[in-house]
Length: 335
Ligand code: HPA
Ligand code: ZN
Image (cartoon, rainbow, N blue to C red):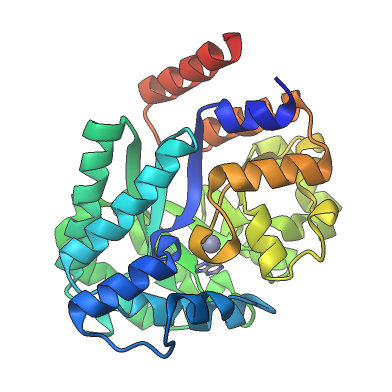
């Protein structure tokens, strides 16, 4: 088995997937029809043709428009269930899903519909597909910290249904420090903490996320390549970085996948993982990310296994579940 075949076959965890970014154009049109929402694009093909991004913001504009078809708990369930079927095909055995409640509550969708719809898909994934999962509520960083506090308040009646909070949307000009107080409150509540940092923003934003927000993982973090001291610190502390190669390519963070820093990150001893970010928009789910990255960077079988191990090391799971995931990895490798 070569490295690509191995990458396809091994069990893995996905830790950076915006569930709204798994909405395929076909499902967007189905839900638009079901909910009588009008779309700015006449057809599935026309919508897909608009997926030519120049940077993060050019993507976010289309991503928020796509999410406008989600109204009911059933819609959120159907979206997440479609994702879990793709995850299963790619041998994802654990997934931590980001969701953006502000995108929905701003349109009058109740927080209960968002969270209960997603939770029911998570339960079904556990029983029918054997995939464990958890939800992470993301604050939109282009909005105010006050709005983040209001969102947290609205989500607290559903506290047992999500394990942590994250920070996403437009990075430049919205540093982690803007959300220091709300993250401190989330920390008191015992929530896990993550934040997007160092995708388009500078390594200083990664430092802020760690020092001020006290995050336990950094989403993206490819800007670590610009700061050798930070790289050394993060390798020593094994701070996980949830890297998304196809996203970085599609949003022009890298010009060519062959220039992606993932291999250098692994060689430096960073706890880097591979993830799909917004698979419906960026050209593929987990295995597409693995296959294209292994090919472009000529990753070895050892690199591939390290990436899978890192994904379980970085997961917010019980030690018992971690041992089971690692045992499953060993079992598949022995075949
Ligand atoms: N970066 C920031 N915000 C996002 C992303 C991303 O890649 N995807 C969905 N929201
Ligand atoms: Zn992301």
